[in-house]
Length: 100
Image 1 (cartoon, rainbow, N blue to C red):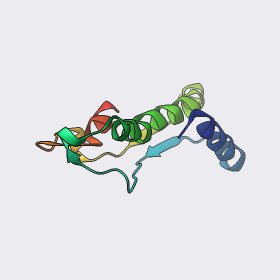
Image 2 (image 1 turned 120 degrees about the vertical axis):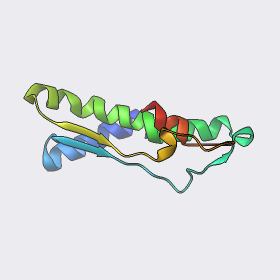
Image 3 (image 1 turned 90 degrees about the horizontal axis):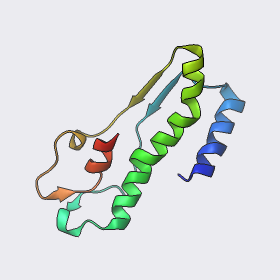
Image 4 (image 1 turned 90 degrees about the vertical axis):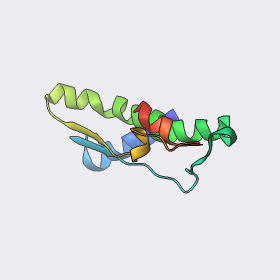
């Protein structure tokens, strides 16, 4: 998601339910697939990084100040096991998951 889209989403959440006390981020996409490492493209890396890292960081930036101000809150993220241990000769979302 682009930064402007995150801002709109955050505004909608705040208007509907107020600032959240908990963020749970577990993204997925039908386009997120593993490919042989030699076939991984910069476009695939960018798409995975946007979904798995950049959007997560933008959401945290939006809602963390409220959690800090109230001295309470939680941020949870769910990822695949490839964030910890890669698949031999395969790549894709794993490096972006590990960057979280």
